[in-house]
Length: 87
Image (cartoon, rainbow, N blue to C red; front, side):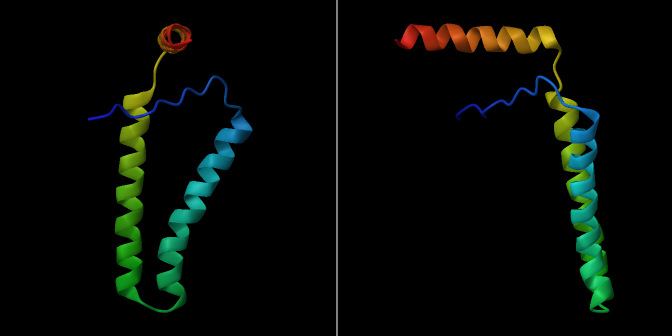
């Protein structure tokens, strides 16, 4: 199985973090809001279930992928060394 690509965020401002979180809240509210707008209780429950599953998945992913600056530097150094060998 091929290794998943890694994304290293060097710096993220408070504003960027808040905007990312706001986008998540709007998306999740939209799932439930659509059911509310058309008067479907079943869609509201399905939207809430999908919202909870999404939140759990994002939290699990965030908790398992956080690394220290030193670990990130080691990964970048390794990638740079591998890139230099290909030339």
